[in-house]
Length: 183
Image 1: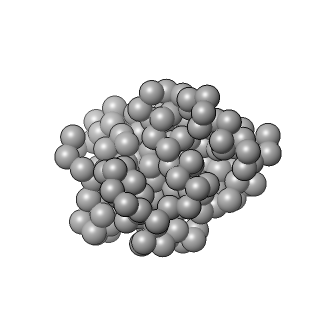
Image 2 (image 1 turned 60 degrees about the vertical axis):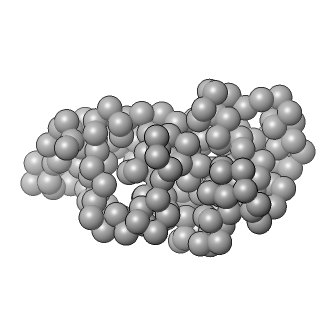
């Protein structure tokens, strides 16, 4: 159960109710800090629509962060979102297989992105070998975007855990189809 009540649009000043246009538990909890939520949503909109990093690779990286952190909320939401940005169900199965050390169908760049996200989630940074390999595929802008996006979601999974944000029932179906491994 969440540590904060989830705000409804009526709980916000009228000029800030747009913040709950996407009426999910995360934004409902973060709306207790109205200005913080304004900036959070601006930044996450840049991640989703402004970054020049390939959206499919971005979503694989974010999905990996949720998977590594065993974050039901983040993982379930990005299971749904990644399908909207070109990730297939086979890609999701391949990400899981890669994490389990089994044969997978991830290509070189996808494997590097997923491995880099796992390293940042687990160890806090990319190792030199992975960074250099990724830098062989991305220009400086995309490298910064990748690292900033992964780092942002590494922080977000900690926010979700600390506030104990609940998975909405409509996202549970994604967890049922692609369950997280036991802790």
